[in-house]
Picture 1 (cartoon, rainbow, N blue to C red):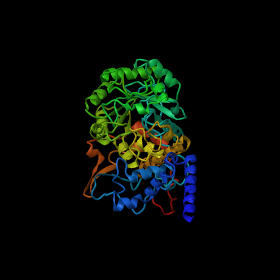
Picture 2 (picture 1 turned 90 degrees about the horizontal axis):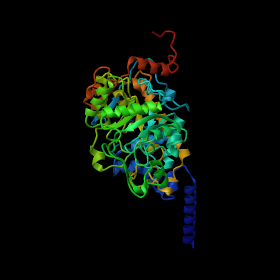
Picture 3 (picture 1 turned 60 degrees about the vertical axis):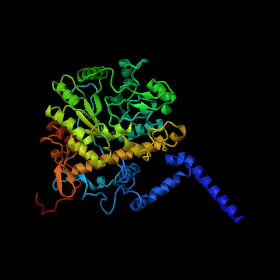
Picture 4 (picture 1 turned 90 degrees about the vertical axis):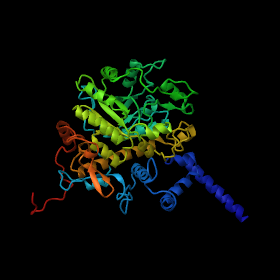
Length: 526
């Protein structure tokens, strides 16, 4: 009798937990997998101990280590994202470890209160360049944030995930790249957009799949699109067209993309509207003239002939792209064959530095906004990107983590357990867009805050003013080599021109900010 009572009590208790899990919206995993999801959270709590003695350390997991994921999770929840007892990175023996060099004396000290997050104000950190200004675009603008959300299509991500991202960028004042899958209703929740045009021209194509300029203009005018990005390739699968499995194609996706259901959607690997740099620039200028928007390109980096030709043809300043998004080969939101994911395209730092150097030699770096992409949603990686000459960074997987992704790596199967990368209605319902949008906004704001504070520790008011001399790459604890030497930069490369530097400094420091310093004593020497 006693055993039956205990069993009954257990059943009632589990039923209560299940009911609570099904009705709460805070945790998508618990809502989709009531009761059993708690086992995951329990294992997570003892994970450090298990890995320490049995499995892996905090820095061994890939593509994002537990330390990296924990930082994103804590930042998105506005929890304590500090660590204690020093770094557990193997600085002494790791080749390629990044060190940012602070300055002992600098024009302005970083605010301790802001750096430690002891206030609720968002940290303003606009772009250092005005997109479209050098080419005189009608709707040129200065991005309000140097950190924005990278291209992830509706279809690869769920509608709830897209909505959460769009609401989140609206809260944080960032930009949301639509990805090549078209502009859906989920993208229309207050966030400003960068419309990506891929090789299949989803959202701006006719019934035969051909590019339709009139449809593009209608689409742009019906939504808050601030710029257009022409996708040439991406880090996850450079030189390979996108693939949306038939299992993930819903009636809504079919309508938005203009594609049939019940069969895989395979995008072409190349554009039909142009076949070389000359024709590409003509097409870019035509789109910019018809829409008035800044127009840029996104590409991973392989052979350099394309980039050399682009810089050469832009040197006359009669035609050109307004921004260039360089995607590293380590990027990975798109499902791809293993060989493409692992081997094709240069990693971000190598690829970006080659592209930037090509434009630096042509004297064009102030005419183009450079955007970095490829695991740059972590402060140290982002700072290296800025030092190499990036003006902004895009985040993708880190944004997914902030809205609930647990790195289950099931994005390509339609079985994402947290509802981020699936079209399964049961799994999607677990992701509450309103709550998760706040998580994304918190993460974006925290990353900007960290970038700003490290910049000020280096003696500059903006990460765009960090140059390639401010970062060193260590070879264990034996030597350190400045970033400039590692990537063959000439003096001044990676830095803004004097006019741009003066403009962004005036924005960030309208008046000398000495409020963070202790008042001088009567005997101070100045």
